[in-house]
Amino acid sequence: MSEAAVRDRHSVQGHRPPAPSGGAYPFRNAAKVFYVNTTGVCSLTCSYCFTNEAKQRSSLDRSDFDFLFSYYGENIYFVFTGVGDFFAGYKKSDELLRHVLSHDVQVYLDFNGVLIHELPDLDATQRDRLGRLDISYHYAAMKKRGTLDRWLENIVRISKRFQPEKYDIKAIVALAEMDLWSEMLLFYKKFAHPFTRAPLRLVLDQYDPLLRDEQVRAEVTRVLAAVPGPFLLPAGMENNFRIQTNDYYRGEEASACLAGQRYFKVDCLGHILPCTEIWSRTHCFLGGLKQRRAGYLEEGPACRQINYAACLKGWDDRTGWTRKAGA
Image (cartoon, rainbow, N blue to C red; front, side, top):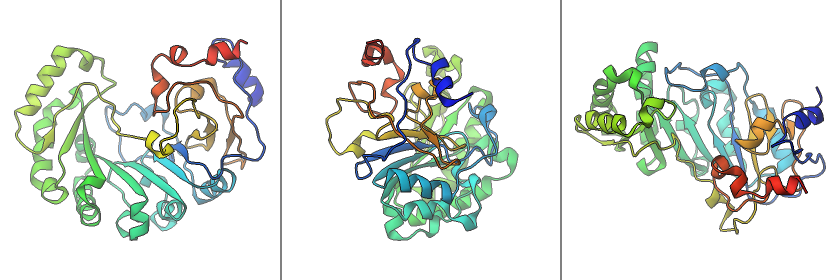
């Protein structure tokens, strides 16, 4: 099925999404955000991972990023997170992270810490281009896999190269692993915190419907609070990630959605999409890095604010997309 046919079939409320342009990209020098799932490969299998079924043995490589830079230019804020683990997607000798950081970029990097490859050996300029390290602490999965000692060793190496304000360490609190909560907290308190000097941020499993009950959350918080230590207790059903992208647009008026123009999603197969949520469901492809094809939307939907996942709630209420498409 052609991409045009797919767009017709998966349109928003029966309206046809705008066709991508394959011409010269007009925003090469402007600030851009790319939300990239670099790999479908992971070194762990967590019980609460919502992407387990979506994982694929595919990864982006240096040549894929070279093509991305050649078409879209630089001045890019990369959000590396998603289906697999960033460092599990390439060999250490490939130095993919160092290659990306050799460009005019800022990087938000989400990873599980079992592999860190060249991260501790980056030079000062490359480290400055890392805006935030979001490190996961998947205690049960690492205990089962026998990688806790490796994770701890890597955390110590990271703590020697980066200041605590540069990284965030989080643990997902899942009801299925309740019997390990105390053990998980005490391990971090005794072995990791003396080096990280950073609190462990506890995040409720946002995909567990039981944790949406206020009384259940209150009881979970009570149990976690019974273990004293450097822990940040859950603040409701917060998102797993602390991603801030709108600051990268440097104060520009948030009067239009930049999806498909200066905001993109790229999955581990190299598919280029104009949005992390809405158009990934409507299959409005802008190209593919693996096929060395890229494009953009000449005109995006009217949106009232630029923010990461701002359109997740009330898409039709926030935007003029439906009215405009039906005009």
